[in-house]
Length: 197
Ligand code: ITT
Image (tube, rainbow, N blue to C red; front, side, top):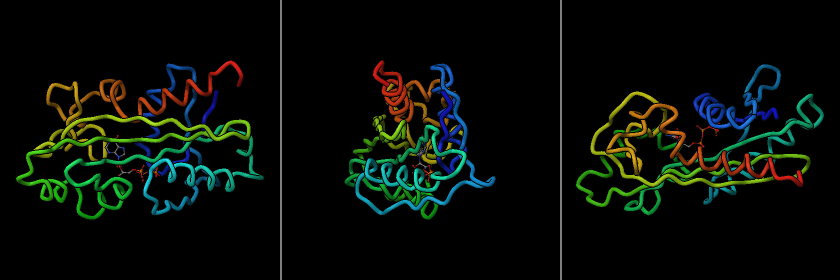
């Protein structure tokens, strides 16, 4: 099954393809007229609400185009730090672009509770229905920026079960096996494969 991923983040497309190709899906970034469609991320509290809004916008933008009847996928994700009451959470993109990894480490300096989690909600449109699935990856914020694989907050996030390595020190397969994106997308693949569909 071909799935059009509506995202401006090429790293997400690569990871989604690594996760879903072995399950029989072909993942392609959605480009309309050669461009990533303009999707506005609402400033909502929950990532599920944001994912749904992104998908609804994508459905409107593809109506009347060659992609109208295709399966569309969107994802919203973020880093939620326990001792910062879930910050940056839904603001993860903006915070990454502004204060960046160094800014997060400064906010965490002297903090002994470094527990955090990555969360993702994947949403797909399929035959007129919207299906969603969530994934969580628990871990801790590192003391230093470490590793050069992955993207975003990977160099400061040490997931559980990775022997103290940050996500940016894991191979793509190691990351996908335990990541928020891996769990969310496997959930979506199961929903798409239900016999009733
Ligand atoms: P789209 O909305 O176009 O899909 P985006 O990069 O803006 O792309 P999000 O809003 O979902 O995506 O991402 C929020 C932030 O969380 C962003 O800064 C990402 O880099 C970061 N992030 C998401 N998943 C991550 C992961 O697996 N590893 C590290 N950082 C991640």
